[in-house]
Length: 241
Image (tube, rainbow, N blue to C red; front, side, top):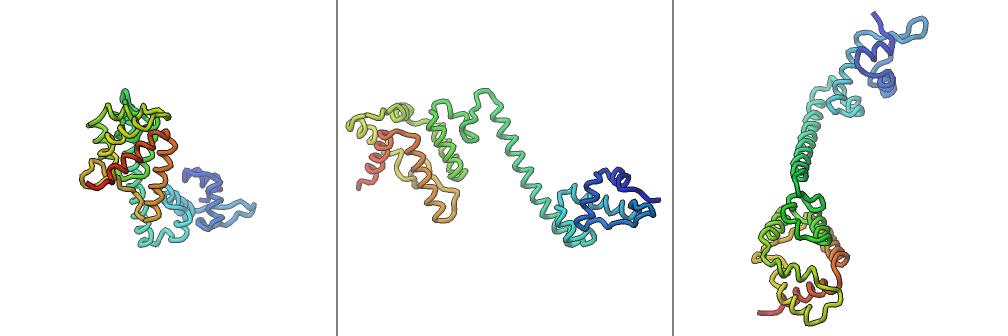
């Protein structure tokens, strides 16, 4: 018994276009033709087509099916392990997405702050939320956990408000007084600081890019008086004891 291209495709649950493409790239041998010029597919063609379809369904790229060959068991085993590892990573990624979606589906959840920050987002303003989003991209998960814990403890709510409400034209006395109060919280992170910001970047030039990005973000998100207060606070911390 022989089948036409259409019949073969229907039997294999694929399309005529796919069958022709497999011929074109050398995955499926061309069958003999009947006297009337029509192709005549045999059981061997159907078997081969089903094998190809199975491998493609498992995620094997066509180019690798052709390169390795269905009978190359060692090559296929290595390829299957690679695909399985990729699928495992994909599944983990999807599970993380589902967990985050579950959190964002809760009443009061905030979608404009990093995952895990919804509970502490209420007092934050748009510029604070934007900076947190940038932090989450640039700093390690451990760093962001430390930031979240600090916000949860909210040790200085009145001081936070004073900084957020600081007007652009704040006078020198107001700036200096606020800087004195902020100094313990803005010094460079160290062992005695509640937040240690560690960049995700591992190479020196990447770490430098992180610092440059954060500085640019601060300048874009906060007014000049606030930036001046931060600079003063850092200078206060550098004074010798």
